[in-house]
Amino acid sequence: MSKKNNSSGAVKFLIYILIFLILILSFAFLFIIPQITKYKNAKATYVMDSKKYTVLLEDEKELSKKLSLIKEENKKIIETFSQEFSKEKFTTHAKKYFDEVKLTKLDSDTHSQALKTYKFSANLKAQNPKKFYNFVKDLENYKGVVKINFPITILSKNNHLEIKFHLSAYSMNSK
Amino acid sequence: MHSFIKPRKKRLIDEMSSLWIIFIALMSIGLVGFGVYVNYKSSFYIKMLEEGEKKHQALDKKVKDLKSDIQIFSMQKELSYEVSSSNLILKDSIKNLFDLVPNQVTLTKVVMEKYALELQGYTRSKESYRLLLEPPLKSIFDESRVEFSINKKGFFQFISHNKMEEK
Image (tube, rainbow over all chains, first blue to last red; front, top):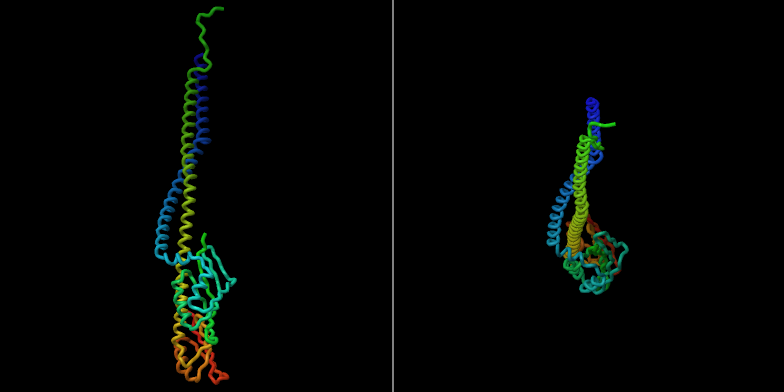
């Protein structure tokens, strides 16, 4: 009787050990290990992302500093480019030097993402060539970026000069 | 029938089995608890990552905008210098032309290019051109040639073509 009890106890013990092991391994493989892997991946990604963020933050600080410096150094240039080109205003300005000013818009305007480029054909009448010289010289102080393009044709007619050229005017393309 | 021993209440589960069941249950609870804790930590990092992603994207956009602004302002600076220098060349070319032409020569047409100059006009004598205008033109330009003709008034009309090598 006692021998029978002992052997049935051993069998039970083995069964419980088996159940225990199956349960532990099942938990480990189906629940714990995937969770740990997920945790490790999430942490590694977070650490990597934090590092990238720190680098980006440093970049941002440096670029902000650089931009402020560029803005400070080129205040006048930036201000000039921010002026929208006005044909009327430019004509009024040119009339200070010439008797007649005729600006004709050309079809070759090009507007990029950052810059608007207007092109005009200019026909001017002046009493003497010095006026033209002064006009070009004073363009440096004009509130706008205007480039006079070669070729320039100057014709002498009766008592005046006819001056023809193309000009390009630039202004910033506001976002 | 009579029994000499008092019947004992039979337990549904014996003592050893109870101990095993309690042990396995406790271990299971422990493992589930551990798993839930690890899951909570992962969720914490995932949430932080999602929040960080938004901040990251905003910062990334700011950096891109800053780079673009720097590029635009640098381009404006370069263009401004280019325009100034081109206008300066033009201004100097006009000044040089005024200085070049002597009183004995009258110009009727000037075509000024960056590396070339065409002059049309008239003069009383070819020598005025040859002696007073041609030498400075030849010193400035690499190539200088002139064609003369006589007009109705008896003046020498000239067309002068001058070229220099493009830099």
